[in-house]
Image 1 (cartoon, helix red, strand yellow):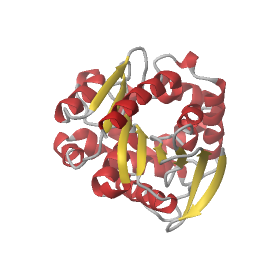
Image 2 (cartoon, rainbow, N blue to C red; image 1 turned 45 degrees about the horizontal axis):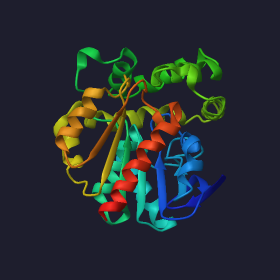
Image 3 (spheres, rainbow, N blue to C red; image 1 turned 135 degrees about the vertical axis):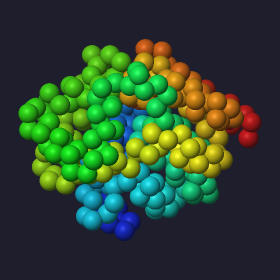
Length: 291
């Protein structure tokens, strides 16, 4: 694993996980980082050259005046692919799944296939929306308020407490999260406290996600632009992106392969990396047989 910085209209921090074979670009979610893919990287590098960027406004990639919206980061991902030489297998989780959908639809020549892991999508059942998810969506729509709340939250918790609460929010069983994943998240949590731009970047990115979550029509326009073979993996116990949302996406795209992972939440590649990779390898083998 090698962390490097590339210049594509500004500095972007990249983890090069190594490997040989076709390019695989892994795109993290909101409050995530390039570290999110560490637990599946060893397996994935057996067949792919694996890289993961810190999106603009996250991890070690400072905005420096650049927008941090999902649309802007979709263009960033396309530029990353160009830098390393595509086309690529694009793997995205949560916000990164939405960004991957946008990238694949807008730049079909750069993306050979998609793996979407609990991608952000329209809320299916508002009555079952988790309070923290509703709060994130609501405050992100009010300029200034969300940033102040993020700052207040971070001021009242240690980095360790914030990481534990984060995993309690996204994982079905936070006790199974590995020490390595906790240490990675702790490094990023402590880094954020040194970045004065971080709270604003978080709320700005959240605000850019909101239209895709609030209106199905807006999301559908992007969903139907995807032409590449796609695997949708969804943790059946995910309370951030509801299972009903994944089921609705699957109905819109019956040509996609869909797998639900029982007992898993929003971050399968961290909660159960071996299970996620078994699903991926099965799909990949079927895809190769058809080609």
